[in-house]
Amino acid sequence: MKMSRRNFMRGATAAGSALAFPSIIPARVLGANAPSNTLNVAQIGCGRIGCTMDAPGFMRAKGARIVAACDLDSRRLVGMQQLVARHYKTSADSIVGARDFHDLISRSDIDIVSISTPDHWHAQIAIEAAFAGKHVYMQKPASLTIREGRLFSAALTEANRKFLLGSQQRSSVQFQKACAFVREGRLGKIKAIEVGLPGDPGGGNTKEMPVPQCLDYDFWLGSTPKVYYTEDRVHSQNADLKKAVNSRPGWLRCEQFGAGMITGWGSHHLDIVHWAMGWEGMGAKYIEGKGKFHTGGLWDVHGEYDITLTYPNGTPVRVWDKFPNGVRFIGEKGWIFVSRGAAKMTASDPVSPGRPLKALDASDPSLIAGNPSVVLYPHMRIGSRPHHQNLIDAIKGNYESLVPAETAHRSCTACLLSWIGMKLGRKLEWDWKKEQFVNDAEANAMLEREERAPYGAKRAYMRLSKKA
Image 1 (cartoon, helix red, strand yellow):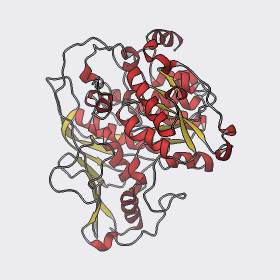
Image 2 (tube, one colour):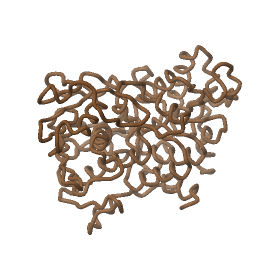
Image 3 (cartoon, rainbow, N blue to C red):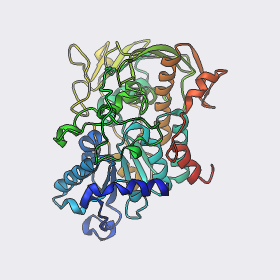
């Protein structure tokens, strides 16, 4: 990466004082909150999710403090430094700034990295951070491809670092109760599961534009192919930075950088399915379905879709854009439905049309009455709590987080299998132990993507792992 980093830093002067590298005060000298009671966090990615969810989450967490930020867009980097400085009532210069994440993960005074980048950067940064000795919080989805996800999970295990995925629904009481009620057996045997997800629109401006001086676009593209710049392919350059970071970026709707809503929201809901059913370490056996992909504009992710994942015990999980946004468990004794209700994680989250959904509903109120008797997670009682706090507690208590790396990989795999099923439109058989399709070379070719040098999760893992 040395050559790419030198090239990258040539354009970094636009960040001004953000590129100064002041010392971070070690936790051991912080007085009453030390020693080892305060973990230093570097926020990597300063856009919509970083500014509205992950940085605020860590700023509210007990025992953690954001001390550094990184973004390839210098305007967003400065904005994050100012946001964090206002919270801690300090100067923006006191928040270390970098436009290359390597400059932060190489620092011995950083304990945790919070990754809120576009999807195509998730796995590589997590791999490099783990091997640099950092604990990792990362937004979903866990990876761009299934093979990439396997490397990411392997790296966290080999490096023995704690990991938490941004699957915040696990920290919400209604999802905890729904999963526990299912495990408790209130529905009897589960006959079917329905998962409703939103879709994405087509469109997007295809006109080539000059690359903004504040953005290192080649680095931003990372392992994906080199393509011309247009704003709708990346993120808003609105002069009002607050409005820019609160709008949904165009990269979410480009297959070059992700798979669309099937991973964007599918990672949330399919994770809940796995949690309730005890499928966190395994996967589907059959995948069958269809999807329509947008054409004629810049945005080319899927629109409509209808996928059925059948798990080894025979339970079908139907994922359909016509279902209400949430998860319905259908059993011998009735059904339980769980959703976010009217709540939004971010202001730009999509909502289901029609009347507001109930956060927790059932065919018979007795199915969701009281508290469940089963324990979902040994270090958690039923009740909503700050999600980011779980990683801090897991590090200090030396136990597994709510969503460790392998769990994150398996839920992302279910989403990516659905995407492959949409693409091929035929029944596929999946060997979840070997993580490959049975007798289907075309499907297996879709388990990974070619990585553009010098970037990529595979290159990072091969370079850093002793097991590679």
